[in-house]
Length: 113
Image (cartoon, rainbow, N blue to C red):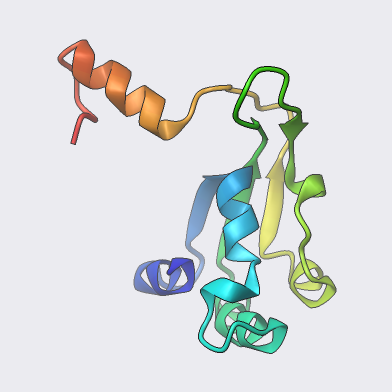
């Protein structure tokens, strides 16, 4: 779970994720109990520790899929008020990390693991 990963890095940690991962970070079903309260309880310590998650926009899967940003993520009001998630404005790379790793492996570079 993202909350567990962030806790490992401690106070003031910063992460960069794609908008698809941001969707999962704020989805209550990924937290014990599956409720908005469980989501808030899991993320509150991160916000209190100054953890920041920078969210890069990304085009959806399939031809013609719209480009989505943090503004398109259904962030609960309580979580939004903490400013835990922050946009990465002006960034656009329409390739998934899976595609980038596959390309690097095919070219014999790092990142194929």
